[in-house]
Length: 133
Image 1 (cartoon, helix red, strand yellow):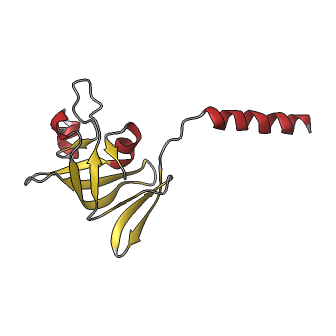
Image 2 (cartoon, helix red, strand yellow):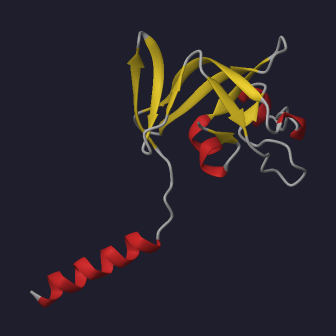
Image 3 (cartoon, helix red, strand yellow):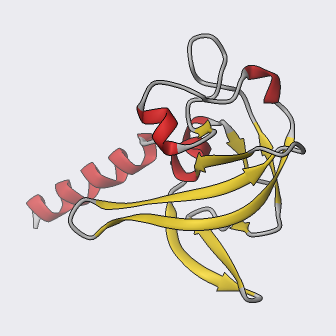
C-alpha cells in the first residue's frame, strides 16, 4: 500500500514539473483533405495558413523548414531568418518513413514565391519555428 502511494506521488510530482510538449497524436482526413492533429487539439490541414516563428540555428535561420530533404542531408538550403513572422500556405501533408525506423510528418508549404519548402512539422512546432493558431 505504501509503495503504491509513493509511486502515485512520485509520478504526480514528475508530471507537474515536466514540460507540456505538443506532439502529433494522429493523421486523418478533414473535409477530404489530409490533416495532422496535435495533442493540444490544434490542426494542420491542407490549404491552411501557418505562421513562421523564429529560426533556431545559431545564425537565426530555420532548421526544420528547408527547400528539400535531400538538399538538407547534403548540408544546406534551409530558409533564412527573413521568413520570421511570415505566413506560409500548407500545400500538402505527408507521412514518410517505415514501421521499423519510425515515421515523420512533412508538410509542403509555399511562401508566396515559386519555390515550395518542406517542413518537419512536429520538430518545427516543438521548437517554435512554426506557430499554430
